[in-house]
Image 1: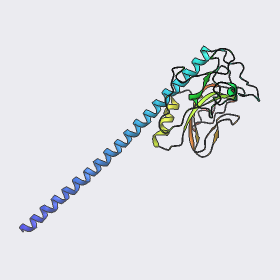
Image 2: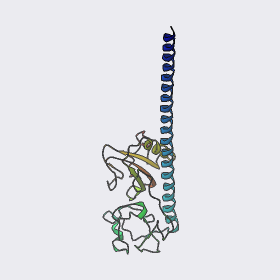
Image 3: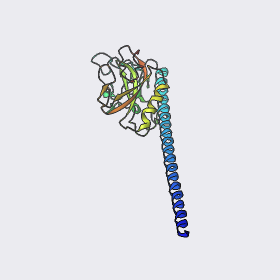
Image 4: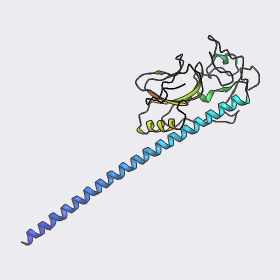
Length: 240
């Protein structure tokens, strides 16, 4: 009888131990899940904040150029076959424009925002436009947030806009971009999903959201010809 009682006690103790182990495992999984969600939320908020800050910086720098140098550079060729068809001469033109072929600093290889220049600075129709970002102006554009490419720039038939893109699929990115989009007017920003194929960003197919990427675009000015091919929820349907 004594041995039987001891075995029963040992069996009961083993059950309690197993229950304790199971509870500990459940608590650990719950903590890990909560921690993972918190980390994702923090990453999303940080990404949204960084993008938003850079958007504000770019917008204000471009508008300052337009306000201070109201006439811009009227020698910029905006004709159909010119260097910058239908561009606005009092806004920065694309930094890879052939208008800069005769400038001291020639056109860039791409159209990155960090390379845009201010028409009218220096005064008159001088093609040596001063860079908006850099040591000369004292304004510096930070590197884009992790997982995103450098901001790019357009000034042409559809108005003036700039955009960044990512080909990463991290869960928090879609939520971050949607929340950021909600911070702006319906026709001011859009999310372009090109994960299934490249999508033109303007009516003349001068710029595209690259195949496999998601682009976030910010408009500074808009013309009636502008292409609104963004959000899947259809909120841009009534634009421009």
